[in-house]
Length: 303
Length: 303
Image (cartoon, rainbow over all chains, first blue to last red; front, side):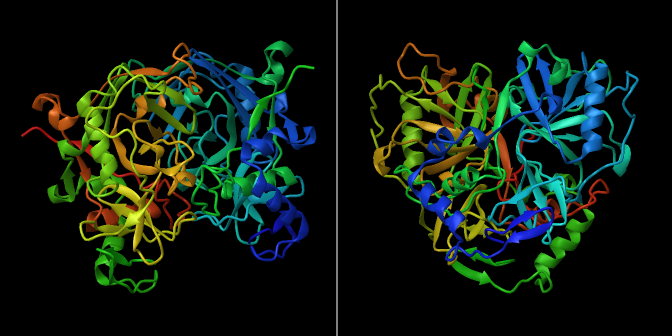
C-alpha cells in the first residue's frame, strides 16, 4: 500500500516500497530527514493551509471554555446538515453533557427527551461507511493499521478505507464527533458524543461526521459522570450554546486554518513523525498511527 | 504470531492461525462469542484478579483528587527504586506539574532545580528496553502492531517485544508513567511525565516504569500550560504529596486489584474486545489495539 494515492477511487500512483519511491515522495522523505515536524509546519507555505469554512464549523460554548468542531464537508452529509439544523434551532442551548466516561466519550444532548426538534429530523439513517465519490480526495498514508485495510485523510478528517479504496468511513480518533444511537442502526438524531481517546472499535458502528479542531482540553476536563437516568441525576456540565460559526458576528467567529493533507508538506510532516530526525530520538519506528498523526490547526494571523 | 505464548523468552505454544487454534484458545473464543467484555469481567473468578502490592503503588495527591500508579514489578527496576526513594524523601511534595500539553503529556517534578536529592540518585541510566528474563511472564496478544513486532502484557503493563521475544519494553499507552530527560540518554532522574494519549513514538526513547490504575481523569483535567521557564511562570497544579502506598496508614492505602493478563479469562476478554458480541455492533474488526485493551481495575471488596 505504500505511497499509493487514491483519488476519486482510482489508483493514480502505484509503485512504492520503501526502497523504490518515486521522485516526489523521495524528495519529501529526504527533506523530512533534515527537518523536525515543528520545522516543517513552521516553514509550510500559505497554500499548505486551508481556512476552516465557518459554514462547516460548530462552536460549542461551555462554562470552562469554547470547543470548535470542523464538520466534514464531504462525509456523512446528512448528519452534518442535521447538526447544523439543530444548532440553528438552538436545540442544544441549556442542555448538557450527561455521560462522560474517562478515556472513552463525552456524550451530550437531550437525554430526557424534553425538547422537540423543529427543522431537524427526529432520527436519521445511519451512515457507518459510504462510497468514495468524485467530490472527495482520499490521501492514504502508507502505514499499516489493524482496523482498516487502508487509512488516511479526506481533508483533515482521518478515514479508513477498504482494500479497493471504494468504501470509506471517518475514524474514531480522539476528538471525533459522532451520533449516538440505540441498538437499532437508524435511531440516532440528536444525541452526540466526542471521543476522549481513540475508540477505533466504534468505526463503522456509528456515524462520525466531524472532529474537534480547538478546545479539546475542555472536553478532557469535563467532570466524569455515568449516564444520568432521571432529570434529578447529576450531569457533567451545561452546554451554554452550540452555534454554526457562520451565524456568529464576524468578530466572534473562530478564525482557524488547518494543514491540508493532500500536499507534499503533509507527506513530509507524516514522514518526519514516522522517523523523528531530532537528536533526542534514539529509536525510530518507521511508523505512525493514523490517530497519532494529528493535523496542525492555527489561528489565522490578522492582516 | 497469533496464539503464540512467550514465557521466560521461550516459545511455549506455537501453532495458530485463526483457522487452527488449539483447544484452550478455541474455548476462550467460543466463550467470548457469547459474552460481552463486561460480562466476562463480572464473571471472572477471584484468582483472575491480582491485588496491587502497596510496595509497588505510588499515591499522588492533587487538589482535584488522587492518582494511583502501579510501578512495574519487573521492568525498569532502577527507575521504580528511584521513584520510591524520591517519594519516601518527600521530594515531590509541594512541587508541581509544570508542563501539561493537551493530548500529549503532563510533566512534573523540580523544573527549577530547587531541591536536593537525598537517598535517590540525581540521574540514572536509561532503560529504553531490556532483555526478557526469567522473572517475567510476557503474554503476547495476537494483534498486529505498527510500532513493535509483538505486543502484549507483562503483569498488567502493556509491552512491546522484538520478533524473537528476547527484548522487551513498556509502552507509552495512555497513563504511562515515564522518566523525562534531556537530549542525552542518561540524564533523567527526577522529572517524570504521564501520557494523556498513546504516544507510541516515545517507546524505546524514554523509560516507562509504571502506569495509572486510578484517577486518570484528574490528570486529564489538569490546566494546560507550556513548560514553565522561571519560578514566576504559571504552573499547572501543585503535587500535594507523592507517597509509596505501603508507607500510608492501612486505612489510607488504595485497596485495588487488577485483572491478571496471563489467564484464560483475559484471553476471552481480549477476544471479546476484538469482536464485540453485543447486538449493538454491526461491524467487527477482528482487532484490538494494545493501548485500547484497557485492563480492568477495581476496589477490593471489604470482607
